[in-house]
Image (cartoon, rainbow, N blue to C red; front, top):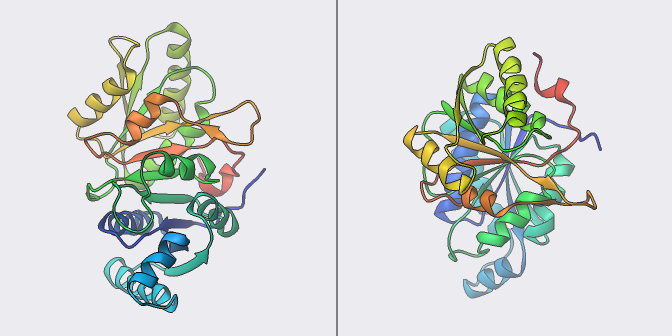
Length: 279
């Protein structure tokens, strides 16, 4: 599948503060990347129950989205559109991302508050079904771009898509990439190829080798925290059917890290990289 991409950031919202933070981060990134922002609310049973409780019509959702779009446009000077779509957050978000040709999806996660309880395994379902990379954000606010990106490397297979996304983000935000690798000769060879690619494209990077290959997630988080990193990038693995993608337990630890560092999750897809990067 060669997905179309239209220089667009999609950000779902459930109208909670965490959702608002995701919108603000998406808008900040869109300004750097010169992308359009689409703010999506999925009208599901939770929405309908909340509307009934507040004695509101569904039209109020579109009014909220219009107000958000105006505020974001006025604040960040980016092209922005509000969209309401009936369905389920587990399928509709990814369907809309594919339909619009979104390059990135921003997802705010939080505890069980608000209408749609987008937390834990619920958020992971959205991440692994997305046709575009997903940047998962918590309550931590966006701080002038992604100056420091941590790129964990755990094997010598399939790191290229994540590497190219890291290069793309680093080029746009003038970032330094911090490679954090497991020990091993085969991984060292993969890292050499990655750093050759970064060097040819004038991307600044550092390399750190994990002291041990156990509890790798904690080491990555501790390293990212001590570096005041702005983003961690991970890649999901396709399951045997190649129809969906899975996250390992260490991926989940990283996504929901207590330092609240945003995490970019890349599902392996056949993107048209010439539309994204021109190195």
